[in-house]
Length: 247
Image (cartoon, rainbow, N blue to C red; front, side):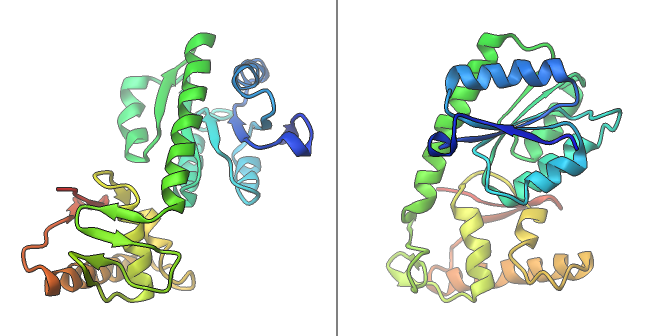
């Protein structure tokens, strides 16, 4: 078993941080930087893909520091990042010995907040930990409040549809789930893999999911265009995903 957790006591564990790293000295180095910024943090350390995926089944993490190459498996970190992004609750920072110029574009596709090539100095590491936790807190605060984007106003926690220019937008429950993924992060790509989780989990055939997503996005656009024929806020980004383009 390679998963370990330590903190200052359950009453002080207001922040959970996941450190995914197969080298013990690097795990200790990263944990020390986290404690310098958030002494009360609960830190969960993992050095394998399987243990990390099990850890993601538990309470959410505010921050994850992730190495891409775990025990020679260069795809392990990518799988972990993809799994965390689908959960959508964690600020992800990659710290890896793999070439930054090669892997940074891929990581940014997965909405990784930053990518550092080892070795990273302790000052920079503390700075990115502090910055990521502040940004995470701000995004979570926005997620709990009403959504106001362009002419869209929505209180997702209420049993009421979103409104566009004061008129209700009639959407199915699945279409509402998809829309909230887009409008929570305007002008940021939401990958297809994240949007697929809005559909019933019994239907996991990739071809059916792709077709269902395309149909649902068409219906969402159509619902907005009944109110505003010039509506053009939802963009497909190649075969990668969709985004809400703010005006």
